[in-house]
Image 1 (cartoon, helix red, strand yellow):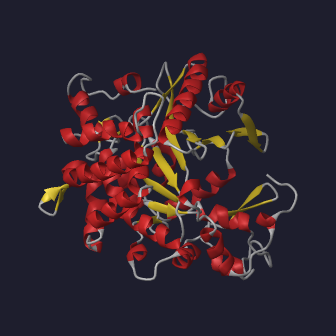
Image 2: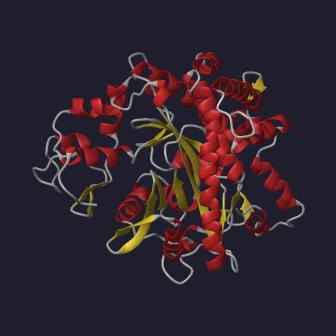
Image 3: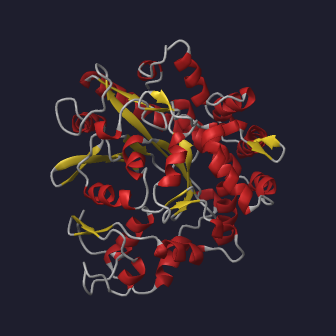
Length: 454
């Protein structure tokens, strides 16, 4: 989108401006909000194949159909690729996974209403087009070559660069879905504490939400294959960010990290300029051969921040990135889990007490072991299940103290119930699907598209 010049278009020269940009996200607790994002796989009801962008039953037709509900269309080079309405957007992941980026809301009851309304709208239009939608962490049936590509300029650049840095980056782009929540912080000290707690506990969320056990119709040996994929995508921009736990960590240290993450692109005059592998530090000095003498803008910086993919990502808020996509009740459970832990001071203290003595090696062992073993991963003589139950207890207490009630008088802790049920049973969504695959489904993943569609 191009328009009149504003602060986002002013050239940047001093990296202090980048630090101040992150710091400007600080808010008093009364202004803290909850932003939930989720992705889902589309499929054609007759042959289960993913829809292409174009055609009578394509993703573009779906987006066009959603405009009847008041969504405003956004086009790139004449192709409809996104919608927006009242602080929310509907966008496309590289293979047409449909994403709702929700508005920044005050409580989880509102989040669940927003999610339910969106899924209802998608189902209404999808039924007319013969399309269904499925929430899982990884595409259970189709090969990478079977997945379509959406006509977005940035994806073309990423598609060409990804295989240079890892073996599974294209699978991340085309065959994964997630649910995320974006949460605020008060100031730098509050950001640091929340960042550390959420990084250390991110594998717990991965375990509770593990729902990607199939690849191309067969069990893949993982419970969250989506989480495993990130370990072989691009080491420059993924991982557990050990420096977050070092003394002196703050906004400036995170900016230094981002400046060392290789670039993907710059968006200039409605075109994506391929800058894959280039240095943002050199860009700040006007030393990029592709843009001779040009300096980055705040728009470039905001774009660049979205091309780092750690387990928790800092922008003007913190993004929790560890969970597989799933059915509607887990789309409400994830923001509830993290809101309970991070938006109540007593809960945040308790969560920090739970993780503050984890060693670097233990944090990595959790991150690396959970994709395969989830709740059953051994940890300190017990298992991740016990850690999950403790984190859920702390979160539930935090939500109870927040005391945001719905019309029936229930607080937000009600949204943790699916997670408590998994933890109590010591059985993830993935393990339940595997049991069906080996039992009632007779060794086929096709029933998942019927039984677990929205």
